[in-house]
Length: 243
Image 1: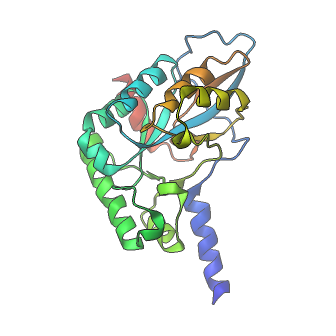
Image 2: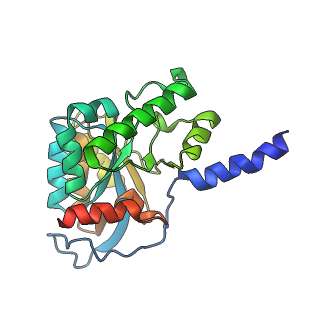
């Protein structure tokens, strides 16, 4: 009955879903390069910038440029069919110290996607990313953050980690860079924030610039795996970034 199923559901959520709220414990930041901008008088805040729905042939390279300029590390949840079109951008993400996660192959509407189709798309994207990077990603972000119990159980059986978010500027509704600037002005970063943005739109580029140059605080973005107990993927990224 329901009583016997609930412990399994609780275990799935505990082991599979990573949703970082405010106050995530600090980690070792020794490998993060020093920001080119003065940190004097600025409060340091560690968080994760995450980007969905790419890679995009125009916006993703610009975003990678500005992340590199400010020494920020990010996690990109990529769509498989786009990664197949632009494998060089996936390679650049890894080479520059970022992390790549799985955002399904087509980003199909969750309500119209069966569990079988969803898991097939996860597997197809994993195979593609393995071919491009030499590594199968552990991290999954479902389209729109929506999962059924069946889809969640399928990911759990594959030992995948679902990554959601706690900050969403809704950049996909924006039409001008000034809208992102306005959002950044009212946003007060907190330790451990997971910020959702999109690299198939141009406005995340302005967000990285504005937040990195803020006069009152110094954000340091880390890959999602930085916050997790297992470090295997981060080890691979560090080795690639130092090569």
